[in-house]
Length: 318
Picture: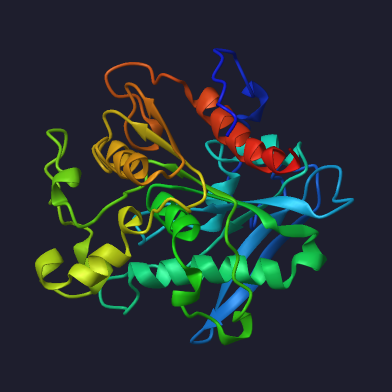
């Protein structure tokens, strides 16, 4: 695979415009056609939606897709995060290369509402299934899909790239439309829930197994529910035949500690999987400053992310 180039340049300064809510704010800057609040499934009477952004020049032929899954601890957040200044420049850069971009909602864990992380994974998979089923309508090539997410969304994006999606039954109307992504990209996503040591850091007093209840909905942890913990851990899905992954991780992240990215990278190297890792110095969660100026900086992180997605598609032409 072509090696990522990471020059030190000032990029996309103009893209740091104020973008608040892609679904409801008509002033969101986007030069291409948009399909907002598209319902991709219904669960117990609730419509689960996505926003779809077409490239500025339209789609003369089947276009590649950048599929974004928001973060928020599997408990909060929305598809509108794709319109925020941290994410939108990535959309714009790939759209200029002909990509369609999609940002999805999914159900959230709310204590005792019965929704678990597995349901979040299933919803995200169903979003891909919907886009494959409607590929002609939106001008999408389902063989050219790159998935991307941040934090909890990073875990979901890795799951989309690595898992056997047919094992996650979702909306019956979408059955048979599974997509195998071309590649995945994660910003500071957790890679393995089974190893609580990965969640420990001197920078935080949060309980190392703080996400366990969101996996099982029950007390007992990994010792009682090893199958469930492994199933939600990208670490246990990666193999030699997995699609390429890009991991970006801050070295002083107190929410999803630094150790997660090299942990998965080591496993990938041992099995012959294609994983690239970029460690951002002086960066906490959401690329916040932590002990200095993040290096590479946010515009460069956005460029690296967009360029990786573009390179995966361009590699198919060779």
